[in-house]
Image 1: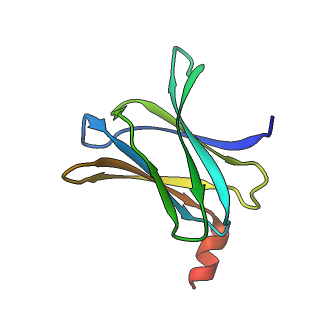
Image 2: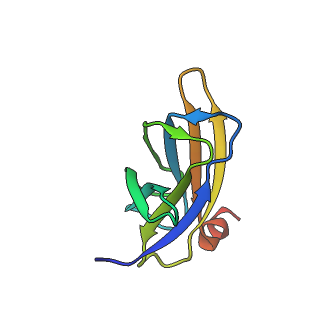
Length: 115
């Protein structure tokens, strides 16, 4: 089993339910996959795969549509061999059909290329 970098957050947007998670690659890395899980149980010991996200270069995004409730805990897992530590920023978007949780994956090197 490969080790991975893992980050968790609790869904805290304004909607009671969301029906899509979108992951946006804002890192210096390209051509990688990450996984998103919904955690449950007393100590978050149960995890259900929400989706696998295949990301190309900077700005690429991938989405999966399933229900997710405000207050649920989410785990984001990226490959351990990624050169930089990955950080996330979470955004909530209300659209007519989709209420979306957007996970922005970032690293320090990506910002160096923008300058």
